[in-house]
Image (cartoon, rainbow, N blue to C red; front, side):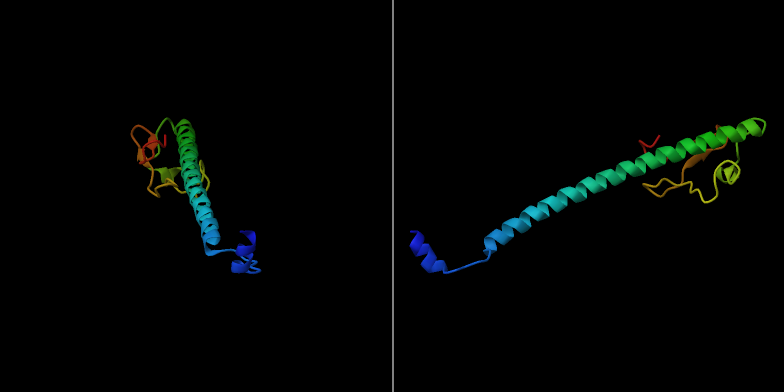
Length: 116
């Protein structure tokens, strides 16, 4: 049997198309898993950044009210640059929508549920 195979194949030193397709399929599956994992990690990072931004804004509002006779700022822009550094974006990094601010209650929240 071995002699017959050697005669049919000769001195072949390469891969067959089937072997190459199997390797390419395995690589495609691994890339798909990696991309899904990356997208999940990116979503979690954006959610954590949003929570951090909300905490920073809430702390700045507390500082503002303590230093301004317990009056809440009229808008979030009043917090810049004394309480929040210049260039701070009042937007959720995940959805790119502005944070919702209630000047009467002095509360800020994200328009996306789960970012609290």
